[in-house]
Image (cartoon, rainbow, N blue to C red):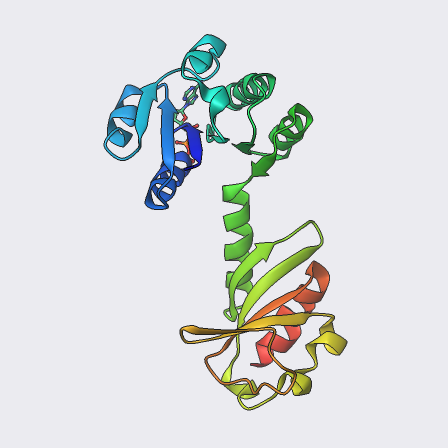
Length: 221
Ligand code: ATP
């Protein structure tokens, strides 16, 4: 059976989630208190409804409790986001994802029992900062408070070296998970794999180690 999603708040974040879910073939109920937003999304999603999500009765009458996954994408109005999450928790919604505006907001949301808390602005800021610090850093994904995965462009200076030659594990405590070469991706590359100019190395490690790698080794490539 198709998974059913409800997205509350149709700003840029909630709106783009709706579009992506629809393109993945999911059923999406889109909710916003702003009529213009609802009209904009009505032709795109399965159903679009004008409602104030802090109104418990309104959420109940929409049957939101039966949805597999509810995404609260209310940005600026932190109180509305918190109240909505509380109501959804009390309704025992299976899975709740909430967009947090700041660390205090996140703390309250985790106390309320949100299953997943996302910080799109903060995360994109971190990604861009890594990219600005080193032009070789193409992307950055935080796995936990301590560990991340980073995509590094292999420069011409390491063209022809093997993974053993680079010795990232001993020098930086980082491991190469995969090598992207054009359209191909080599997962768990062999130690004898030769790196070519234009390759992208997907590296996992502790943040401190990745920072050292970015600052010292990558500058030389
Ligand atoms: P983004 O950064 O994703 O663009 P935004 O700045 O547009 O977000 P907000 O304006 O804070 O974010 O809120 C997103 C949407 O949530 C808005 O369209 C707003 O009408 C809607 N919204 C806010 N509060 C409620 C509520 N209580 N019930 C339903 N929708 C709400």
